[in-house]
Image 1 (cartoon, one colour):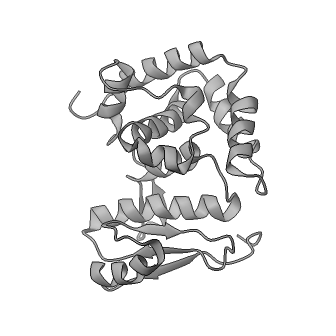
Image 2 (cartoon, one colour):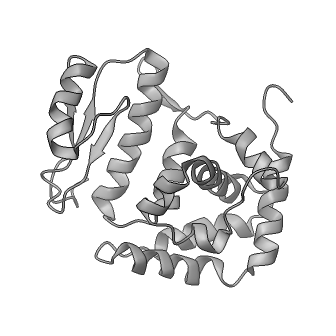
Length: 216
């Protein structure tokens, strides 16, 4: 944290109405969930929150706080990596009494990912997903989030440790001063291109279909 040029700011509103009264003039819209406002000057960036039921509050806070943390170090991290890690960690929790972090699998995106892997819904080619912009992700949220979460889940939990290396290579390829396009292409070139798109996609889909949830 000592490397950061500014502290990470969190602004908590008393209710959703106050939250949106602050957000609307800035973003030109209202939201029903937490928002991280990122500015070129990190000192101006802030995470906006308001009271929600405990489980929803924790998931929203974790997701947006991970986005805030990532952007504090690398302003233009590939969208799939930033959002995928944030989604992967949503179900985790902090045990204040024990002072320990409790990681839990977040399988909320598993069913739509499996549907895409089976060809029942559109599957975004991995090579395209790796260079998605924020606008491209927003235009295809139903497909983007399951695959971004699934890709991170695959790289962390795959039996083949080769894929664990891919995640670390992706992180090490990031340049804090590079543009989104530059970082996205660097990650694709250094971490993914050596595997081969066909094999990677086949293994990714097989992994998605092998994951089991409580219903299974």
